[in-house]
Length: 139
Image (cartoon, rainbow, N blue to C red; front, side):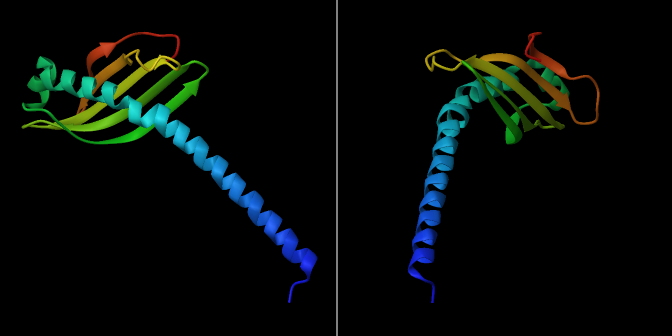
């Protein structure tokens, strides 16, 4: 049976573990609140542009539909938020991959996301279809 000092030490270690887990949860919730949930407007804008873009429709066939996203990268750098994601898209004849890259200032939630890059790479190769391409020092 453990002695009283070792039980007290175990309780202190458990308390520190719970504090650490709480802090990790707080950090994750902050990233989610400021990141993933708020990229929805940029994602929806990008999908709407792709669905209407004549070159994408010509390459993949219409209608264009987004399937799933992968490789979501969110960067928080001082006062700016940036993200990049890849989305599988599909048309009536072929499919491809959409790349979305955007940024916005951190303390201005009313400010919309600015699309820095929006391009579609059709399956089977060939050059990407550039819908939005802004050269930037961030790249």
